[in-house]
Image (cartoon, rainbow, N blue to C red; front, side, top):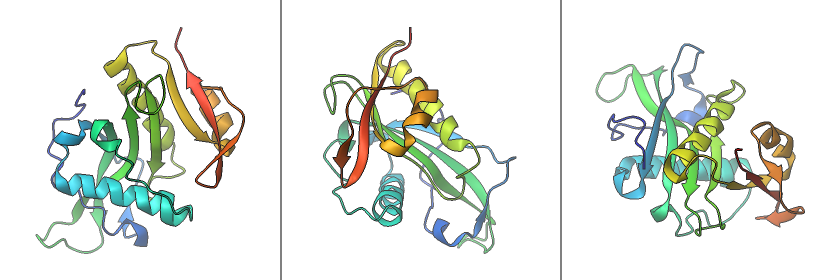
Length: 192
């Protein structure tokens, strides 16, 4: 696993993102992390799983089993921001570090015959600001760094996002299918 940032992830706190109390501006810079399951602190693992549930279960109104025994073998690629907080933290600080973007990267043989990227999300704090594209571009690069440049990458994309993923070099590799009640398509990407 390539750790793109050696900073400690122990101080990540994503507990209040839903009530819009954090303010993101274009000058804020995301710090990117790439960690194995064993390298995640308990607090960061909790925040990643909490954010996945917030997006995939609550926002998308989709009850499904998120913890699928693949996280232990995954590369957890995520972005954090230190954001202004309207209220002082317990320690008197005016900023909090929050997880704002995430993708789970799996080796070949875990979900597909190729490495794959899944559980892709951005928090409401950064949506609509181009950061999802940055997340996917960096997740693809993380895949290439870990499994080799030119390695085919597979995703299970929500069907309404097919055009978006085509812009990233993915092509459709299946008919539409339902995954957790949502139409998806298998897509693949291979650099020349």
